[in-house]
Length: 266
Ligand SMILES: [Cu+2]
Image (tube, rainbow, N blue to C red; front, side, top):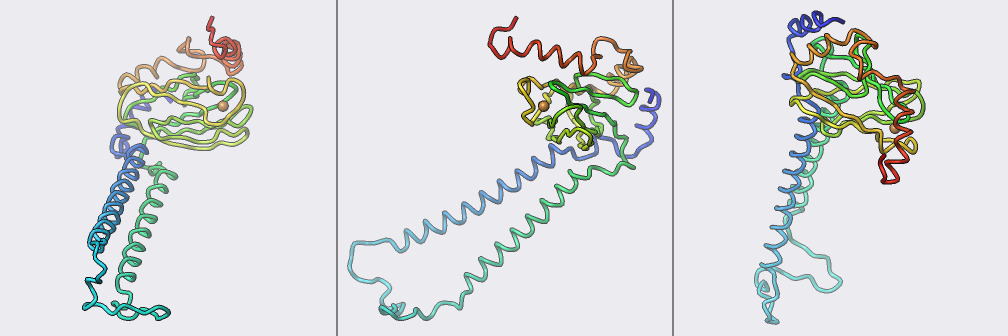
């Protein structure tokens, strides 16, 4: 796909990446809702407990201050009176409504993360990700391959993740994206980055001696800068210095590994 095509498709589709709720925003909202509700429930429970602890505290006298108001059951006798379990009914039903609504809402949010925005309405950029011991190859629609992931700001990026050797797991924690990299299979994940900058991608499946070195940068660029960069990459051989085959990079990192792990970098 040429730069002209990218620019063109970007203007044709109604929904731009910037209008789409990024996974990071969805997860942040889930966190905030749970924090808020958890805090509210905690405050009610603690306040109710404190109030009754204070109200029915031992005032030092042997007399029952409620002797004329309530009829105390005798030993072996079932308590009578009360309000027919109204409190129990209310507390159970209110809790049930809150819990069921929370489950339904959270599930709908996670379905959105799982399925992603409607492909027909987004100009998603498709990038293939290949994990290998010990690094990542990112393959763009024009065939260009890099070891650092370059993506444009405010655009839906769809990743098709696989592995060329053992199980890996590709994740960019700050962008809340994470998925398995399994040999012979493709798993998909998506994200949008609303702010430019450099993020870190890591491997999240122990895959060998170089596992902890299996990190790489994710560079989010402004759209025009990205299109300029993309225009200079007309295939795997163009764009030059970023291109390395899996085998080459694997050897390079493997060669670096013992020195780095030993704490004596060359
Ligand atoms: Cu790995």
